[in-house]
Image (cartoon, rainbow, N blue to C red; front, side, top):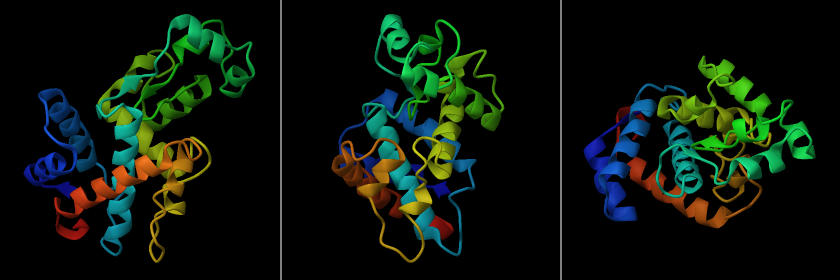
Length: 209
């Protein structure tokens, strides 16, 4: 999608308030990744792709505590190993097999990628050695690809964006939260999604407008 950055930033200020340089830099990194991504482009149905991208923005905003920057899950090494270690039921589900995997493969990114199995899958998708260097999951282009692919393909809960945003149906802003985490804070994230969608309406260039 082609986005007029001046209009995007003007709309962002209108919806969300003043911008500081760290947030400008974080948004620019996302806009760079979007500019190189054609998966949301469909000239025959520009609205659906725009809405899906708007919901991605909302999810990234919420999951990163409104920084729009890939972050680490909050917690200590001990906390992660106790929660996700291979000795735990959760750790087994996540494919953690070695001592220390709980901390090594704790949540990272725009959407928290967690567990050895998910790091291996995501690494294959983006062509990065995330098992050898898990912190690459916080590199903005890699984090963007992981998060958007996960939401498009249903990696996180089995639910996909096209179940909630598709041509010919009303967008399901609240229920789309099940792509990530049940209905946790679904209303607040739905509001963000509508705001980002409006922002995109006024900043997209060409067919996606």
